Image (cartoon, rainbow, N blue to C red; front, side, top):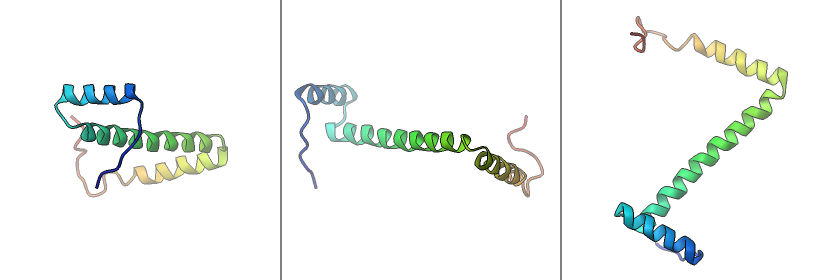
Amino acid sequence: MAVTMRVTKETHSTVKRMASDRGIPMTELLKEIVEKARKAEIIRRGNEDYARLRQDPKAWAEILEERREWDCTLLDGLEDDPWED
């Protein structure tokens, strides 16, 4: 199902040119752009949340302690670290 979306002539021309340059439909380009923007928004919000946590020394200490607890599980059951040379 398709819907209509209003954009400026300049935006339409830009999307049309970019899609043409890549040899894909405009709808596919827009889908990719929106997905990248969605992922960037998730990262931005996560960064903001961590920044707020860092402002609370007690909460940040709890986060760091939890990370230390999980660190010991990274190689559970593995004899050698697969990332070491």
